Amino acid sequence: MADSYRSLFLLLLPLVACGEKEDDDTGDTGDTGTPPITERETGCYQLPSELTDCVPPGDVPLEQVIPQTCGAAVVSVDGNGTLSDGCDWIGGFAPSAWCIYPITVIPPEDECDYGRPLMIQGAPHLAPLVRREGWTAGRTTTPADPEGAATWARIGLAEHASVASFHRFALELMALGAPESLVRLAHEAATDELRHARLAFGFASDLAQVELGPGPLSLEGLTLDTDLVAFARATAREGCIAETLSALQMAEARDRASDPRQRAVLEGIARDEAKHAALAWRALRWALDQGGEEVRLAVVEVFSRAPSLPVSGGLLPPELACASVQRGWQEVVRPAALRLLGGGTISARDQLQLS
Ligand SMILES: [Fe+2]
Ligand SMILES: [Fe+2]
Image 1 (cartoon, rainbow, N blue to C red):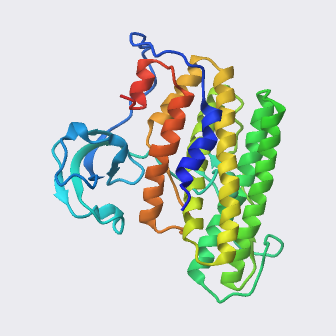
Image 2 (image 1 turned 90 degrees about the vertical axis):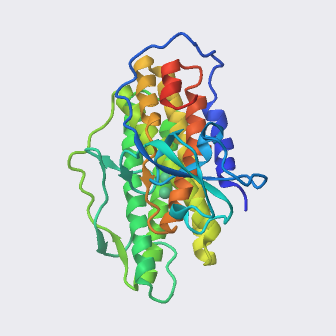
Image 3 (image 1 turned 45 degrees about the horizontal axis):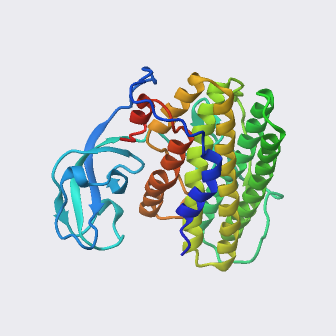
């Protein structure tokens, strides 16, 4: 299986490379916003095959610790490990020797929907699901499967909401005077999401044996982030984090799909979502280039929080979705954010748990 995580990180790499500014070991610029809240819990660490006993806490690579709380970011390993033949909260993975350690984590801030969410007043927003015609693509005859129908309907609604989210994003880019390429890519992404929505509603309708689609999308309370700080914060959270993690979950779902038609659709969606994630990182870099320290610190604060858990809509079992989020955060989002913000102050480094 191709390593989707490595591939996406390599795709993002040129977008997040920044000027090689040296870290300033004495230059703590102080306030970076509210310090993240931490909690104590336990984490699993899979022992390398050559080891038969737990390593001291200081030798455990933080990025390889799997916390009990899905989506939490591991800050430290706080005590000696206990040898175990499994990791309960990721059951079914790689049977081998594990060590269970007491750890400190930053819990996930909130949950968000699959893909790029349409955030209204701080919460992801979807249209209602209704019986209607005209919102499907690729219909075929298939046996009824209510559970599968519900999964694909949920994905369809999330994709449908992403259409609106990208239109808002495009308007914000225009209001902020962004380059044509970003505005164009935002519009293209909205068109991609429309296609994803129709394909998802197509599967949902096939499996439900009744044609389904979105009802009216209420936009009450929707605002535009025409302030660069708010725009950068939303782009980091909704694009760089949510879409990147969603793209990886889609790639996982593609690799596990047994139905060839669903696999082909997931292949296309995963490819598009990776493109959308790249757009978010590109836009964030532009915002950082435009803005001053205020923009930068706002972005640092977003990335200093643990990732929200983008719901994969049931395409992946919860433990797989959880493991994908964890791995995506550690191997793609966090290293990309560190590169993008590289050369920052010590306080920024600390916020991102670099050291
Ligand atoms: Fe999508
Ligand atoms: Fe997307």
